[in-house]
Length: 282
Image (cartoon, rainbow, N blue to C red):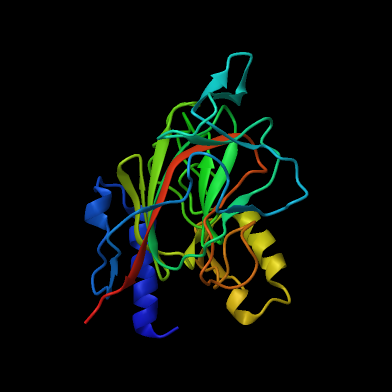
């Protein structure tokens, strides 16, 4: 790796894994030396009425996604979310209901660089994720009360980076992600606090179990998709290659959809909106 690239990667890793300060999303939306800028308007990804503009990852899976006005925890089973109303109005909710063992859904439209706002809530013990470009998962998980977040807790760049501070709210309470992805640089603001700033999604650290699995899965893949990690103080750090995180779409990084995981448990989303970022005009 050239020295400049190595320094950039290490800088991204340092900021991405170590930052914990508060920063409004608007203030974090400019990158030093960046030659791109947001378009003027935000576009909704969910019309509040139905799944127009979305497609099933597995069309043969059980249908569990429904539209409603709001959700509440099931008083008889805190691991479930119950729909309230039928949706159609402002703030309508997209619920992966029942046991949440259906399929992921993804936007028909593909995106490259953008700012993304997502609000979500999960019941007790549930698990979902927001895959950027269909590749890079920001974990959605019931991590309320966890003292030391891991690579699998809420807010993690799955198995690559994790929040140094747990900002998870109790099950059934709404939370927010504000995500900016430009090239390989990821910024995440979770519940109003910056978790990663300009973190390079190709680099990070993981635990031994993930290292062993990823190394095995790399066998036979093109060089650009192979992981190159080294052990340091019980963690495995370095490059994860050009591919996405676990369970993302196959292949190298490219324009892709916003994908919501819908096969690991109940979850609800609302106020999904995106603002593409384009090259600045001369």
